[in-house]
Length: 273
Image (cartoon, rainbow, N blue to C red; front, side, top):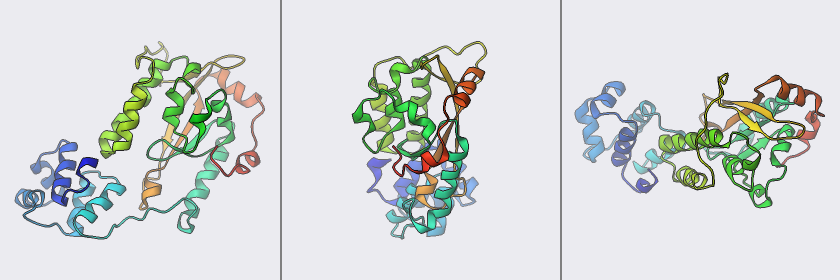
């Protein structure tokens, strides 16, 4: 999709339709427009209105960042602002994210952007950084790169094959959904790291765990992602909370008894690292 950034709106819309594996008839039926009109839009014989672009983008599940580009390609102003998290308009969202991170202690939790760069985290994630090479901790810190790089967390991941397959699959799927060249590049980069992206689930596994070799013993986690589904701002639309929970009783006890970081400790660190 990035290769089409300078294309006209019709070409871009056709690209999104093909990416979603929809025929013109499928999309026309969903958007309640005629197939003839949609064909004219895609071939440039008809210039869509702002409302038509928004309707088609909604049925094509186009992310807000790319919806702005569709509008720009048709000569319209972007509809969705992209503010920084410290902007006054985003104060309520950023405060809520902070409260969620605090409330999740003693369990690790991070706020990630579209590219898996760490925007914020709680202090229960400190142990994840131990032993990682300094160049991986230079901002912006990428959680996928930090996890799978041989100088990062990878040597301590007991089920590295499983976790590699899980993360690479997630990055590749998001790259496909968004058409984002940066995500495709990240997927290619981490796929080239040493190790096989394979693994056999345990007989009792109901989720793919992250099993870390730690002292005094292995810690096992599973993760749950959350997002603001009603976002109208590009920054908010692209944020995800990745919260880790103990996958077994031993891990839960270790976190509860292992000197839990305080809320004040997390908030005292303004930088995500």
